[in-house]
Amino acid sequence: MPGAPPLAAAIRRADGHLKVAVSGEIDILSAPQLQVTLDEALSDGARVVEVDFSGVEFCDCYGLGVLLKARRRAAEQGTLLRLVSVTSPLVRRLLRRTGTAATLLGPPGEAGSRTWI
Image (cartoon, rainbow, N blue to C red):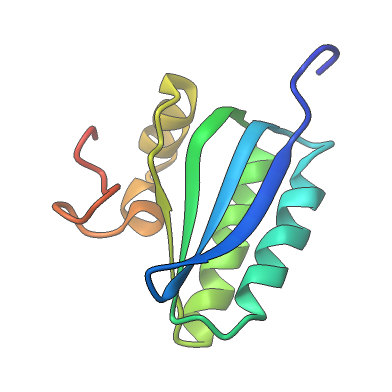
């Protein structure tokens, strides 16, 4: 989208797991960048990868596809990958309407879980 904030992603180790902080908008143009970042995080060997979405304002179906692909890869290698701090009403609606909240956010009651669904 013209004028949309560029996607930024940073990986850091925290509390024995990886945290991927993402900000901006995730769409057809920026989804490949998110995929590269998540692939890098999943190659680290960490048992838990948390994707912090507090800075994400928008995510379309391309971004959702990247997240689901990363989640599937994580499960295959025995890693827990989950979204945390989803604050955007647009992203919340995407997860709710597509039925992917349970898969991407983890069990209710965990930090960053789907308490808002």
